[in-house]
Figure 1: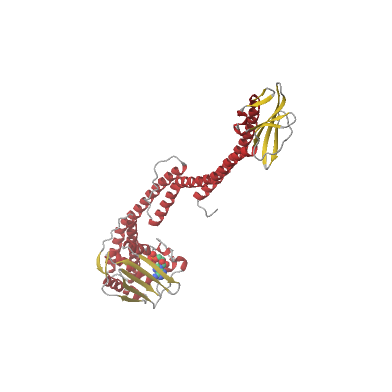
Figure 2 (figure 1 turned 90 degrees about the vertical axis):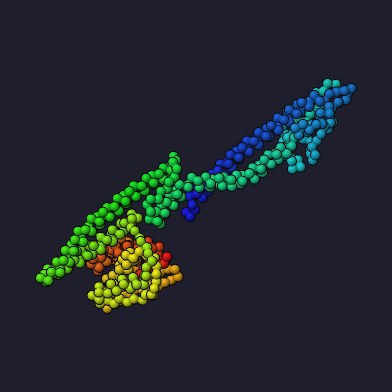
Length: 450
Ligand code: ADP
């Protein structure tokens, strides 16, 4: 039962009850009809026998019987007997071969040759002739047979009715539950496309499910509004913070150029510059992501020599890598051209390579490779650093997620990979990661060239 859908459960339930009620109603109906039938057979028998009295009269000392006496009116067989019980005139049913005792004015039920009969007798005194018995006989079995035919008909009709009820019931339930299917589809679409602008959008109705769907739409409306407000807030804050951070960086740079600056202040300023640089990176990542959320981040694709760009991005990280005693290796297929946004592509690679350096091991390497695969571009950034624990592999793409904040320091915000993922997707591609803790990580991105 648990595996059945609600549609099937409801259909089975009311088909079952419908069948039960119909069987019950038919049972009562047949039992009442049977009683009614038998009592009407009896009264018909009486009536025919009483009427037949007029069809026999005396004529010159003999009995004269009207031809109507032999008619099988309402299936009643009429016969006439002498006072001693000798058969005089009339008709007897085929297969009826008993002569029960006369019981005046009473219905007798007898069984003969596997048939059941009702018998009704009246004695009558005929003037100038004497006493005679009028007997009427009618088959109960035959009357009941006509009922049995109706019963058989009902037995065929009942399964048909059950099937019909099932079909109509199923269609009706499906129609009634349609809004629920629409609600589920909408939720799935929202999850799949991460698009809160989806609505169930059912026409106005009055039943509970329609009201549920309306309430659901209203709730989505409010959620979307709240999301938009939050996106706008993030975008505004990042935007506002950009200028002061740029000023701080510029001031630091300018003061650091002063040759008379003493070493203690120089060191302090370098710390400020480093932190302000990390902050500027975080702000620009936040700005890109919030613009992307609002659908405002522009992707200006043009035909680029990706091989050269990748080589350049790798070389730019060499100074940083050398500080950590990490080598940057490249394996780049030359002359790969593809349509991409130059600055976004570089930001993506910078992030992947700098992660490889940040989470790399002293004396280790970060290897950047680029290949053509049919009409796709495939790139990998691989390191033999600390790796990522299996349970974190799914989460590293989430915003502000860091496997272990204490091991990365304050410069890492946990926004980089969210941005990388968005950039790859904005190019119609996808990015995956393989990693083993203590052994290293490999990020692989693929996107179409055109
Ligand atoms: P962060 O700014 O903290 O580097 P990212 O979004 O780039 O943020 O990465 C999220 C987390 O994934 C990082 O905090 C780090 O724990 C893990 N991670 C990313 N790249 C690597 C890598 N090459 N090796 C090991 N861990 C990594």
